[in-house]
Image (cartoon, rainbow, N blue to C red; front, side):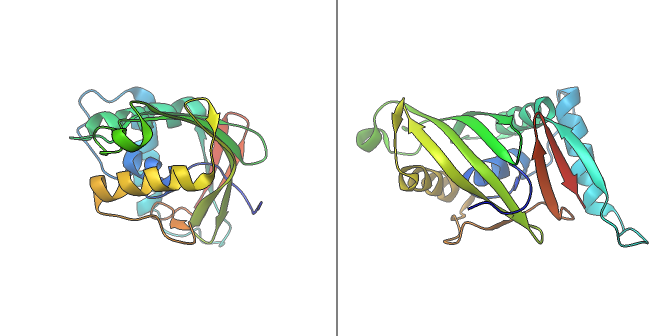
Length: 194
């Protein structure tokens, strides 16, 4: 269940990793981007274009919880027809993360099945290896009631298909952003190794 490192960030496709993908998937206009979000965008761009270290040792950049949340909010705001209304995360010790995710059930055409509100509270452990990540769930609550991980997986898979034409991989491992090898989570900070 536990692996090595990080939390959160597989900003590119699944679980919340899929959601984070929604947050990191593209580069938008810089004209109203908050300073914290701009810092994350710059960091990802720098990592993607960096040559490997000459000594082979990994390099690390720090991203604060505030910067991560600012970037997620910015990226969600850039979506033309967002499936995700909001996502806020807390970076905890030992690669643990907590999050509050709000989706629009009408846009997903799930309101008849799941009701008028899709408010998830989740807790998990971010595991990374060799440039890929997944989130091992500890607990998931939908509108205040504990649910099985399959409920969230179904909703996220529906959102990924509608938004990006993507699906959550069956093994839940997703690629990290270009150049990122691992992410380690500490309280309030993500250490991104590249």
